[in-house]
Image 1 (cartoon, rainbow, N blue to C red):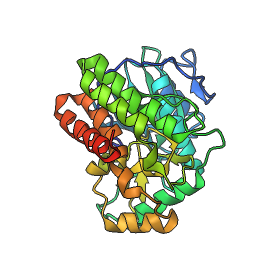
Image 2 (cartoon, rainbow, N blue to C red):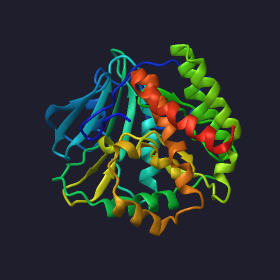
Image 3 (cartoon, one colour):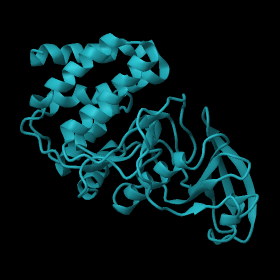
Image 4 (spheres, rainbow, N blue to C red):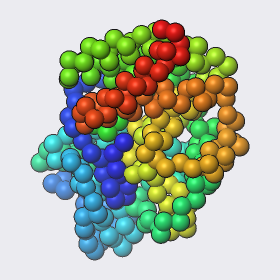
Length: 327
């Protein structure tokens, strides 16, 4: 939901977690005792550079800053946060790594994340030069489907760490049943936030009725845990200098592939995108009836992040489904 790239970064509003943290995977993380400048130290050692020839800002958001580090070994993309520890970037690193390892959709390769000695954290990744806006939505749809097809989990639905959607905590506790996972950890979590932040008992109660009655919407669907980007909107999609699509700033987890289209209302997907996608991942029974259910998660998240302007859209979807389901 928030802009990012080897350039643009997340919008952010702090929202407290409603769940204890999950166990963390081990991933290379810089020690605060390594250096007063762990970014520079990594680039000049493991990054194989012998000289940093320049740095410059390449964008930023409400809480992150982004920089290009030019070196004799090529450029690196660095994001820093001066107030939040390394756990924030851990989720991004693990998501990028999971997508990168499928060998399908192009994503920036992550190299290192860690703590800044003065407080905060950083992440170093591959710098990808963006090309002209040669939008090839058919290639984007095909590559995304290939990633969904290749990236499967044997653990069920979820992810190895919690991460964020925008700045909202995203609970990724492994769950064997998709309907339960989506009801509890996606819609249910957002509804609790709305009640907690705004005292909105009405949307909470109606949303819970929908969760309890939504199972028929999945009749005939193949519910496999596919690797999802999780926050796929236009600000997180770009093209390199060869016109190859790439995706950035993920909120990854393993879920039903159709959930990837929940941000389509601000992604600008056209017919050629869907045609190419469904050639690789065939359209499932009931797809049209489920589309708004996956949109609902993101409308609720925008309501929680940005306020009441998004409430009517979320409530409208809930009311429509309650009528459809006779609930």
